[in-house]
Length: 330
View (spheres, rainbow, N blue to C red):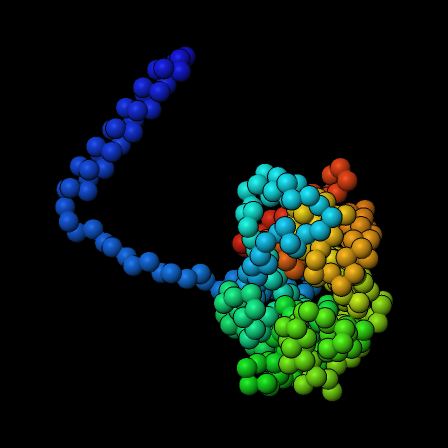
């Protein structure tokens, strides 16, 4: 067995040999191909089977939330830094994904939330929904139902385009009346003026197509709404059942797999009622964990599908395996 000094010497020799071999090979001729940098990502979508339905997760892009010390409350700054750094995450910004879901049941095509639309409040990295949807082979005109978990800027922002016309011209829209009334009322939205502007731009133009969601309502075949207040007054999650499979679309019950999942009692600055949101989060997560329900988290790392398991006072995130061998069930 080699001792430490011999291992170090051998490593130096190998590096020296590798460098010399590289020089020899590169110097042997000049006909080496050079390719330009591409400089962009491919459209981000992921397709999988959900019972007898086809599910496609469409990214609206990454939303940089900014300084985590301002966004996460009731937690010490050094605890935030420790939690993030130990998980190799940045300390100066919280990048959130936007994992929208398109569910094709064979009879209906259902879109869950619709991203930032034309708003650039969080930069140019958002607003990718329509582009990516088309790249995934989904025509926005084929959407039958648009379910909106709540009326925040990054969940209802894609209802209408830059021209003010509906992006999903044949769809019926669903949202809580509580949320509609709250986020279109300037006396209630306070300092969140861009959120008000986004709601006013996207929701009143389609009001004649909106159905109000009630707690427990079957909003589409096999899709039931559950009122989960706190993040907003009318926030909803959706429990999906198809064939032998189920999936919980939890929207914004939990934004972050470390600071809000492992530490579910942390409060979040973008919650309308942070304490109520924390209590709701504890109840929802406990139920999902007890039932071993697979979930889709709107803001978790792409594509946001996985399970949770109890870990201390919180939960650990277990991302689901991505199936590269997808075959349509329909």
